[in-house]
Amino acid sequence: MRKPVVLITGAGGEIGHGLIDRLSGQSERAVVTLDVARLDPAIALKVDREITGSILDKSVLERILAEFQVELVFHLAALLSTRAEFTPVTAHQVNVEGTLNLLEFAQREAESHGRPVVFMYPSSIAAYGLPDLATKERAGGVTEDEWAHPTTMYGCNKLYCEMLGSYFSR
Image (cartoon, rainbow, N blue to C red; front, side, top):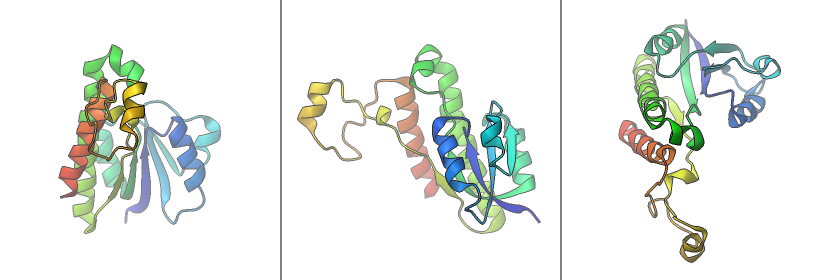
């Protein structure tokens, strides 16, 4: 029988560290992480299983599916704005294709255990396209759909992946 777990991708970042601190020892589910780099040893001690690999590697995801019953995914893995601007094709691969891999992963997992997998994908201000501070001040509070015209590769990837998430949730 596969062990129920929470999967955190991109666990080596600041948000991942905070999430691990919050979840460790408080959940009825074990915490499994997936990142391209090893976790800081102090953080690694707080997880049940650390997997080093890429969200682009479907064989890694298949191994996770075979070993664990993933009930909750926190998808934090990404190439952020600065790096994405220098390597836009790689950013697209990691941010979009990697997210698509994980959405398919969650869908297969949900089918295998007969209930939805909760998929948490934090948004980013980069998904919005307010061109300057003056425009932002004039706009004031905006709704989720206003100014959805990102100006960076990371922002474009983020907005598209949010739409993919909506598609997969249906």
